[in-house]
Image (spheres, rainbow, N blue to C red):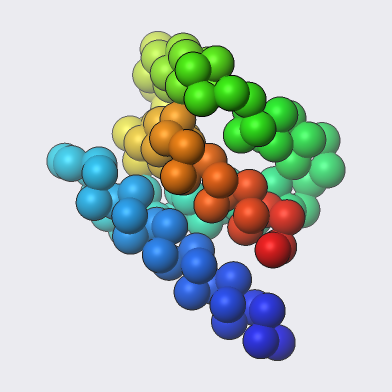
Length: 105
């Protein structure tokens, strides 16, 4: 149970830092999108593997891939909050924190 509390606190810290970097987006929607991204990765092994591959890429490759994916998401009409949450994963700090959350560390 203590791990859940620590994990929730860590998630909120990550979310707060990411939200501060994202301007003009609905903070609650971005927070929900980030939480759902982590939960989906924890629950779906195939998604977890694909996301972890992205998160563990070297910084330049991760940033380029994430930005390209976000542009594709924009063309497909994905909600801005989801794009903003995914875009945040381009940063080393957010990628590392998300990876720790997904691994339940």
